[in-house]
Length: 257
Image 1 (cartoon, rainbow, N blue to C red):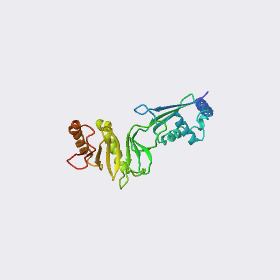
Image 2: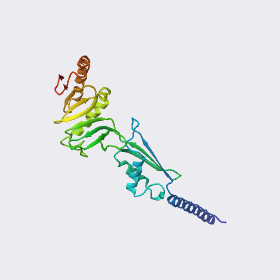
Image 3: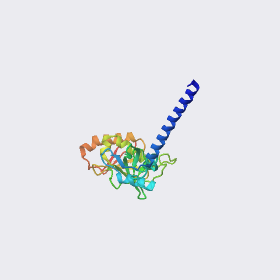
Image 4: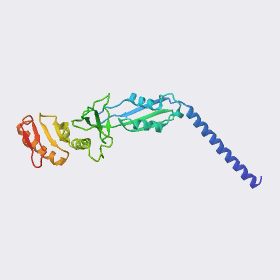
């Protein structure tokens, strides 16, 4: 056998090996796509307090609503994993979703929830949450979050409220909530924010007084003066002596009985 014939036979053998491998791969893929989803596992990471705004039924319902069918027992070839992720991440309680299918045709769905930090009841009676990123969330049928509540003259939510040119009271409420949450003392003390004439009235959890806070400006200074008043005056007279504490004006705290 001369060298030329040997090279031809080697090339033919390599081609046959590659063709056989391609056929096996295609067959495996076709078989895989012909298989059915054997099960669906859902893991929802709880909020920090251990509660959850949604459950597995909500997840499956959202997927069925989008696809028009249940995942389980469907052909694996028609289940678009990336689409399942997009569907879940479009749900108002979901911050992030990770979806994959294992070698046994089981679909795994991991959910990270949005965490509410403020409950808003606006002037039109709309009732919703803002999460840590300032995004709107509906109320949950599973859990009522124990968070700061804002009521009063609050204009309805707008998708671009954080960047609105004229400003939006929700933006100020969001940043006020962030400030309160970052301080252990004020986070434990503050129960409600009432909005009136574009300014804020804080309602504490302890005592019967209202705190006239005013507009969202010089926030750190206002809380500093208010903290000093609590430490020096309230500590001596008790929580119920004053009906109003006014920190709206620079350099003073006015307590009204």
